[in-house]
Length: 629
Image 1 (cartoon, rainbow, N blue to C red):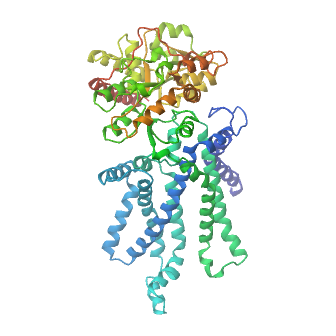
Image 2: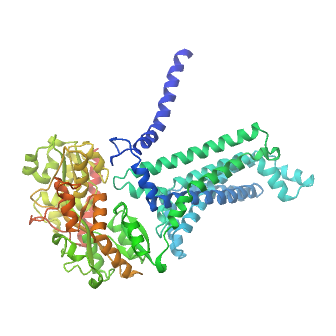
Image 3: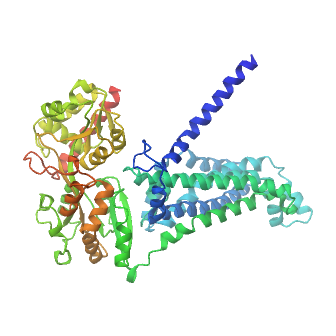
């Protein structure tokens, strides 16, 4: 019987190892992919490693990640060890109380801890950045160190320190030469856990950082909002560094023991190992440090930009810094509402890139300043169709950045254009495609689709029409079994994983460029003609430099870099013509050219009351979708 079980046991072990390591192997392989796809290997290339090394933001994030992790690990290990030793000598009631307090952060949801830190720093008026991130990491690492060290202390003879001092040792010598060596395994374990937790942390870091300071987790999160294979390259580099560290930590003590080096510190073999690891990390990330500080601001000028994640070209920031001598600090947001909260709370930026309806709201609430058109030389370079839109008819406050529509991306081998023409957005209720559709997780765009399918204006404030749109969406999620997604629709549709889905035109342009079987359709009933634009907040500290940045982004070189890399339609007419024309990146791809001749297409108008109604109804739609599954 035992012989029969062994092969099964080995197979299970192999399967378990594959389960853990296949994703890492997959990531490493695709880090050398020539194309942008994260799922189809098109050829070997070092393209994404070159892009990573040339990216100041990526290298700075790596430097921030490991510098914070090393400093936080060192401080938390010292503080946690001393605290654990101190508690071991305290009264039982104090010790028990402190142990419960120490365990509380470990069981507390990270999001609660993150918000707590954020409110603390806001209350104390501490400017968020590297220091606040470091303080937060030290604070949440200390409990892990204490939890690791305390069992080792309990296993010691309580009279050990007294015995050492009876033999002539000072209290300090008793601590460092007797107690610490005995609990060294616990200290090392605590330090390694603290280091791992710090490198891995995203949620707490996301809430306590500011000033453009990003660790690797935040960087990867913002990159993942768009298809960016540099994620694989930067993640592979981290895997390589961690592997080298583990080899050093494990091999160095064995070599030291083999050659009988430094006999007196044999019990501290881990010290040279950790020191070597620190030297390695310092050497590897020296370039990151230089990248993070390579910009010498001209006359102390710094431009603070708040933009969507992965919404700028590869070279646009670097070129602007070289051109002006200024330093650009860019932070990223995930939604217009997230951006609004920061602006409403008084955080100062020089440039924002909100969407149409949010620009209207910011204007109404006096959060924006008027542009000085004498300082702008870009307006005549922009497409007429994206100027003078209803939210800012005179372009007094805004200059277009990207624009486009929301439509249906579909697999031409599965969906006929005849169905699309006959049904429009109602194709999302056609049971022929049940279980084979994507809905976009956006209350605004989903209700636009439903309202247009019903023949209503997407800017309606009629509660009866909104209720009808809600009923339409509930019917869709209950009968069609859709998958509700956000940006993952991009690569999924490029791989033909569903028949059709609701998508932004810029994302559809990428999908079509990756898969010739994909098409893009705009129903005649109308859609959302959207625009994201650059604006200058009322509290901007450097409006002159902000105007210069707007000119740079709208000029041919900047606009081309932006649009060719991101995939969304440029506001620069010359760039539109070149990218969509013969030999252009988006030749023959109708998704790249927004429709401008349909009277049913609309621009969103901000209405706070309607927004609240739609938000509440969309939450109910998602609940209905969950119940249906």
